Image (cartoon, rainbow, N blue to C red; front, side, top):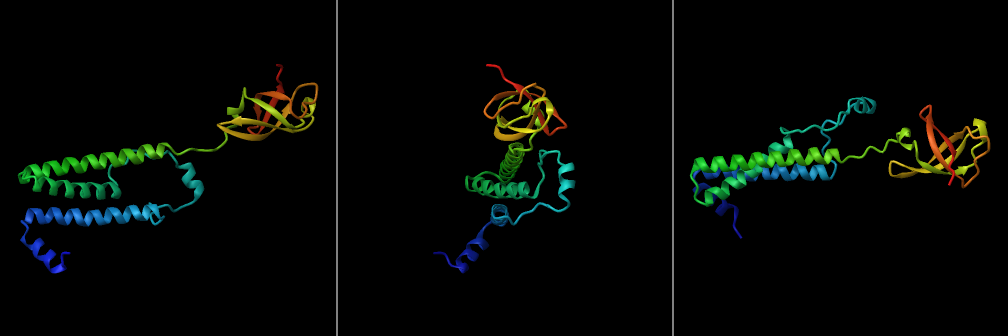
Length: 198
């Protein structure tokens, strides 16, 4: 096992160009690992302050973010390690800088795309009542005739089964277990249903 003294001697004998690449690679790898560990364990908040209503009102989705701290750490991490690989492959300094810069930019692009498309995967579970129109439902609690009262129906909306309030214009009460069709949404909270004839 190498002692600290032998590592210092080894580092001291390296050419300045290679020392720069080793310093960049080690320093930014540590920063990159710490930042990702903090992200995994909840230590990173990305400025998550302010009122929830303000955040919801201003939510336009996540854009394509190329220049972020995370992406810069990724750039310099890959820049350093690819540069070292190119140095050890015997490339000239100019080629080493070019290859490591291209690799770093590719890493930034990859990370930005990854977070952009991951952000697009977020599912908003907010129920949009209009998505229930034309759905077939089953009466759970009887729905009184001619809008005389409110009953409940079970139906699948937006991929989830829900129990929602319903009224009917039908002349007869819709009994428990009856199949009904949603024809309209009233006041964005109440379903208008009619008996489904088989």
